[in-house]
Length: 463
Ligand SMILES: [Zn+2]
Image (cartoon, rainbow, N blue to C red; front, side, top):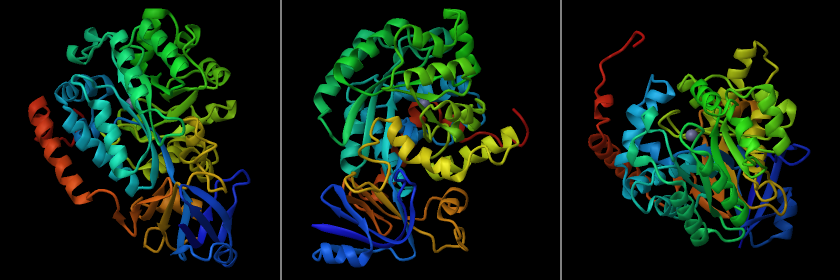
């Protein structure tokens, strides 16, 4: 069965970055088989189903290179706190009480939210393993919603002295053993869902944890993701423990490589950026989260100038507080322009690259996804720009990055299957998913003691 997305304003993100008017895309099974005119495709694929895309933009599905899906249950509970307090007072205790059924409800909701806003690939960083079955819970949510992506088996091996709840701390051998078990269970060559591994950050993982991670990734050819240089606190701990930045330390012990996706890198110095480039280590940029937690403004233009691959991300919804890459695109451009007082420093076109083809490269899937080209996987989205926010429209990329709210996505295809069609999420009951997530969110807040953040006093001034 072939499907033709016909007569669209097509943002291809191919090598020439072609933006085509009245273009059509034909999909067969899980692949894009042709990009041409409607007339040509109708002749070549006479039995194809036609999806009329007149007055619509078609573009590649976006790649969210960093989130913590379980935090979907914690939206709004951690407002106005810096990262360390946010983690030790709210997110950590919530993690302690998280059960696999909560993680599943959260992941389902996070996947639905992602699909609704045009994300077709997710990188989940799951570092709570107080009970068995957390990875399974997320894998099943990907499976049920049709999401593509990575479920990275995260871990924390120290940090009690900094307020990390003891229950979240694991022996690295145990975490790595479990990660290997999950990889062998779920990873198949070319599979839509892959398990990766994710040591948390320099102040919460010991050297052994990083070394065992590298060994595991080499043996299983798995994606590694970790937090790097997110806050000044991270840099201070790295300096006092190792006399180096975390980037320098991770390079020195042989941890970094092209299979490492480093989230944040807010406080990377020029030397750190050179190290990232040297190892072809990729960066997941989380503009909304970096601003929300007041972590800082990462040197993204400097990284791009140095040739570092940067993908875009939302971060967990406890620190951003949704999964919208539309918001991330706009914030990514605006934060750099404001910070550098230079309107040219990060363009709409570049942030569109971060959200699509560069994101695909950041997770090692640039040959499969990230652009609309013959032979690639059929991961694409349809955007209806006939609304007061996006019209009058002159330039589709500008309209998406700066004008759109994100809810203009009407149809989403992943791996050649519709996961949302004409505004209706196709494979799960969205209303039920949202109801269930609210129930789990309320219950988790009650169990973990985070309920107090729901009933906070009105605070107009600094607290
Ligand atoms: Zn994170």
